[in-house]
Image (cartoon, rainbow, N blue to C red; front, side):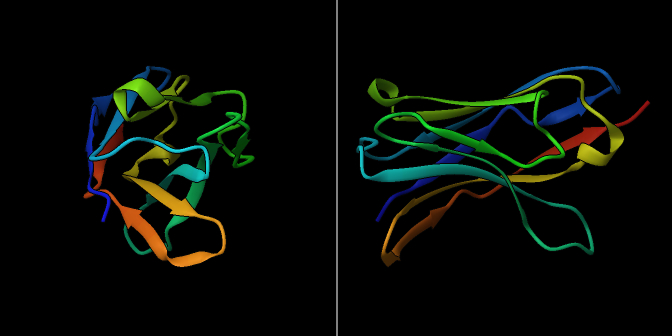
Length: 119
């Protein structure tokens, strides 16, 4: 199974930036879909952004579009989330995910990293 380790979370003021990283235990194959999700206390986990392992096609939640950028470095087995113009409502635990379309058994999560946006 795939192991994922996240880093880069922390405390930042509104309008600031953070860069999250997720290191995978194995190569990112073209058939993989990689994503970032987040969960605030008392709320359900929600999708933030996804990127395909092959072509690099991306999708973003409307709430982060234009502010966040997802990317990956297949050679480093790493997916990133660059977060700019952060808002207090971005405060949550952020999780990375690797899955494979049509394979429910292939779906792995990182441990999560806390992002807090506050003055």
